[in-house]
Image (tube, rainbow, N blue to C red; front, side, top):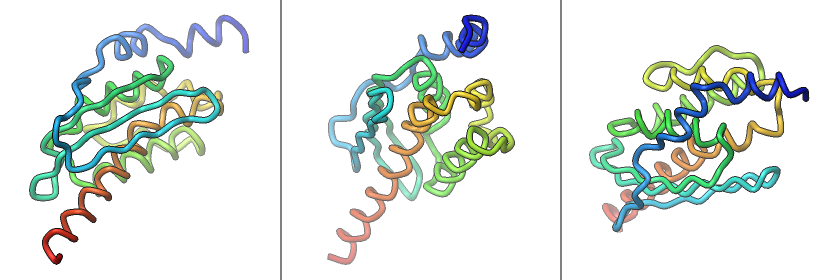
Length: 153
């Protein structure tokens, strides 16, 4: 990987997003918490969320990742409140397809993830970019399972 490739990859927009992570306060009483780690680069993301009527009503993230993982977390964090589990899972699947199989950019409101298109060629970075949506989708599933259990307990 040449220096100019790296400079393209870490574009100004990615660094701006990485520097401006929203919703970084952990929640005191979340409905679900999921921590994900990328074994390749050691990035970790911890997501807390609360769900009301099937939508994310509160969200907190602790992101210890490279700039690419942070940029992804920034786009997600800016758009995550009010989303349903299926919206989160769709965004996750679309982001994965964009990175791995030259798929299109994820649908709005997660279309800001298009800034990460240059990372397609760097497979060792994909896991870090995926962490936040992976953790969020898993946390949503966990929150729904727990809600079902408490309603039918």
